[in-house]
Image (tube, rainbow over all chains, first blue to last red):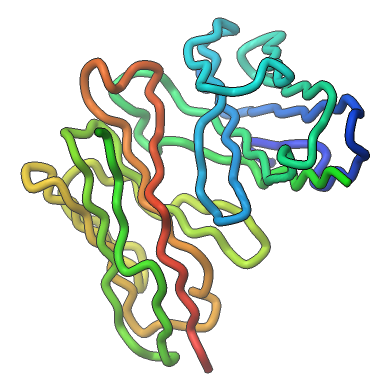
Length: 115
Length: 113
């Protein structure tokens, strides 16, 4: 059973399009995240939701809109895609508090290429 | 400001060699994890280690929270150990808002046969 699953794994699209990435976790965690990994491998948080409530919203263009229908799902919708949005996007989950016994769990990533 | 720094940035090893990777962080933490990103891009959790020492096979990690650093040891390295190793922390207090996991820049490891 996959703990944190993201779809699609690869996404190639043209500039100006709108696309979505989906994430689901079956760990029973109450907090989910989106991270972006740039071409230099640097990982930076974008958003965090706790029980469907947005709790972290870093400096991200408002073309990016997260949606959490329930605590097991966190989707990322991107409008008007730009070349600079090309990156790998990781979903993650954790149990909020001091830190869960096993910390954060990451999905396998979605490689987005904008052409 | 809040920082997580890893060293060295790059490491080339001969198979069978041992190595130590270091992570320094600028403030008190309540969560520290080491991850391995393999050549296929997957982020694998190696250790959850806000303090103390843990071992898992050929890998071990030590965090000295009072001195704000953590070390990851790789012994008898294998080609499958290649990839990028990340240290990531959640800082205490106000800085811990949302349990944000802050990553270091990573150490790129290449193990040659």
